[in-house]
Length: 274
Image 1 (cartoon, one colour):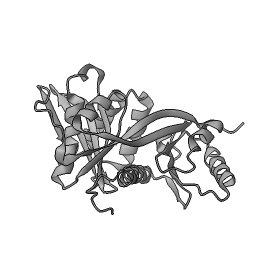
Image 2 (spheres, rainbow, N blue to C red):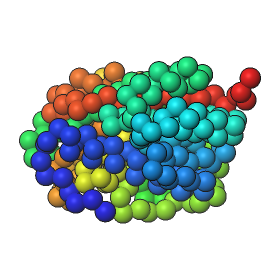
Image 3 (cartoon, helix red, strand yellow):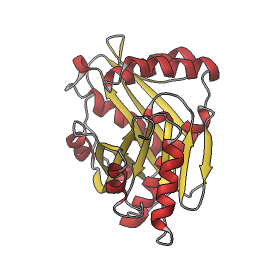
């Protein structure tokens, strides 16, 4: 457990943001029943499921000694699994040119996102929520299924991802976890938006802010983000973090979020070498 971070020293915020992502990724991997490796150089998990975010590298800190050999051995081991994978390259990742090395080995840069943080005590809070919007905490399996359906549609993910998530829920059911809170937004009795709060690394991480296309530009995404931020503040958290999509960047800036580094997401499609 990390103590709640109370100050905004740049390096400390970046480390806490990375810890939040790492802890959430590990929790997700354990929920999938994945195989884990947590060594001094690299942390990864492999569930074997055919989706990039169900397998991958959480942390990489390759020391200068035997650098080339260690990276090559890690890539060979992971790519031999022949399943789709993700690799998160964050501000503290070493070596600094790891992204270039991944691309040279056939990995694709899927996205680059600014890692952002905000002071929950000085949060910019719009006064009005969209008319007809109701936000609820997900508390059972049926609500979780609605949440997953909405996040898949709102994030423009393939339908197969929803099918995969349903299989995970069918196997494990809905499990409450002290660090995780799901929020589902209903607009005129239709589920249209999601957000997720993860408490880890001493900060409140915001994830999965997604809105269906026909409900965008109404302030729904802002309201979903604020629901999570306010709950984190009520629990005593001072700093909120997230990784912003281009669509959400201006919204988060209005709420008081500022950039603290870049997170890059590389994907491996799962093809065999050669």
